[in-house]
Length: 363
Ligand SMILES: Cc1cc2nc3c(=O)[nH]c(=O)nc-3n(C[C@H](O)[C@H](O)[C@H](O)COP(=O)(O)OP(=O)(O)OC[C@H]3O[C@@H](n4cnc5c(N)ncnc54)[C@H](O)[C@@H]3O)c2cc1C
Image: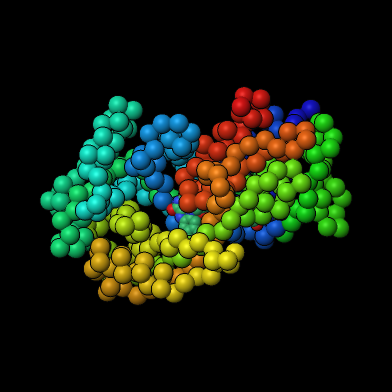
């Protein structure tokens, strides 16, 4: 008999775990989400910038998660497109990070050496190369940049929808508009999920991927405090593409991402706004500052029209490193994959692999 798994939450993390597990026929998988559609919470607000190779992490868990995810993305996107017959918008022209005067160039040079040793590509561009490659950059800035051709950007909602569609083709059952109220783990061999007015759902394993909803669901089993950190972003439509239409990487300047998103449109994001006295409210001045950084980097952005602004809440673990991937509950049959904070899209494939290993007792 196959092993039954309930996954709570259908953002990028739940959807990726469901799809990756569905590639093995050992499992019967059900995914529950309180919302009407997939990717309705943090995932729906994300920019999908995957800063793996360009991150300063070089060893340990933080690097392994990034490395494994970028590696898996190289095959995952074409695999999903083949399975579903749908295109997933993604940008494989890499990420250019403009370095500021205070950035330590020796540290970046060392990172280039380390990545070369690790057999990844990373380049340091001098200011002349930056303006040649990216004529959209304000020429008053003579800045060095790091260019990571193997990092990418993917449209998070289309990706999550493709994961759901491909998982469905592999037999996974998705239940939307289904809020799980609590989990019990008293039985040694199974977990029970309680939902209002519906029969108890019993499965061999439960995987909690409920983002900000995880704290409450897990509270009888483990103290995992996930706080919200707000992010605002905007979409600018220009009369023509910035710079060279044939080279449109993601540009990162002062922690602001300028993301080509098709046609002459660019996403600009995202602010990082912490709760004040436990309350998170979007600050207009943070959005304005975001816009100003983007315009001071690429002045032509000022010629565009802002056609959309949005915000989302990132799930950030309090007092512990992101993400939380763990086994909890009296019977250790509740697996947790949450609190991915600013990197949930990036880290989803590696997270799914760890959950897969936990299920076969490997971690
Ligand atoms: C503005 C912004 C920009 C970002 N940009 C990037 C980026 O460029 N790159 C990157 O890697 N990351 C980015 N992130 C971070 C990324 O969005 C998150 O880390 C990621 O989406 C978290 O995914 P998740 O599946 O854990 O959570 P979520 O997407 O929040 O999904 C959780 C799901 O659980 C469901 N749920 C909750 N409680 C229950 C319950 N009791 N019962 C049933 N269902 C429940 C919710 O309905 C929701 O659908 C960004 C975030 C924001 C806000």
